[in-house]
Length: 126
Image 1: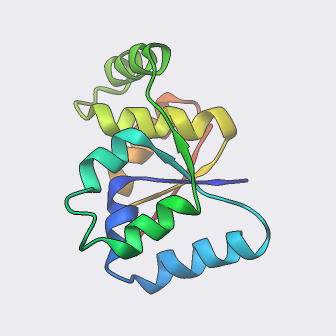
Image 2: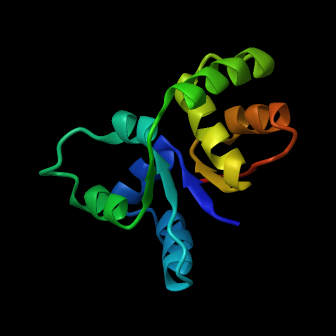
């Protein structure tokens, strides 16, 4: 099972959060790279000169682009789940395609999305 990172997990890594770092280091040691949807990068990225840690994480991650199919599916998921957060829906769907664990700073919202996805994702709060 892989890991997909939400914006809060990216920010936590940038702030040297030990839990996030340890989970990612464990994966990297086993040859596994986390997935980062581009929508999460847009929310977290502010200034590359001061975000060296985040830039390093992105170099060691799979970056998943947002295409039309994923965007439409995210809108449908938002309708089913009663959610208003498009980025969270994109991240949840991205993770669901691989049955990943989502590392998130907002586990409550992701649990709602997970229920609408019939449990195809697991959620870990960070």
